[in-house]
Length: 50
Image 1 (cartoon, rainbow, N blue to C red):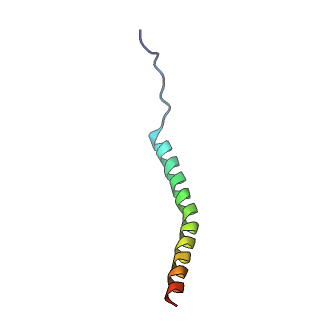
Image 2: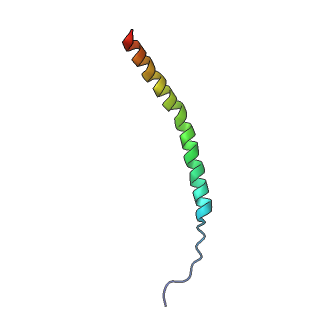
Image 3: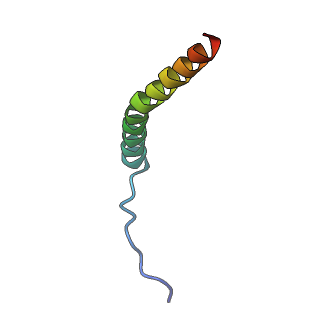
């Protein structure tokens, strides 16, 4: 009795590599807006000193 044996097709290395690639892609996508925010903050700081 008990549960039938099931093959576990989960491959940690493959899944980890895929998740890491997705994370790196998200980081690249965030880079542009973050840079724009920093540039805008710098403009605000410079305008306040004039």
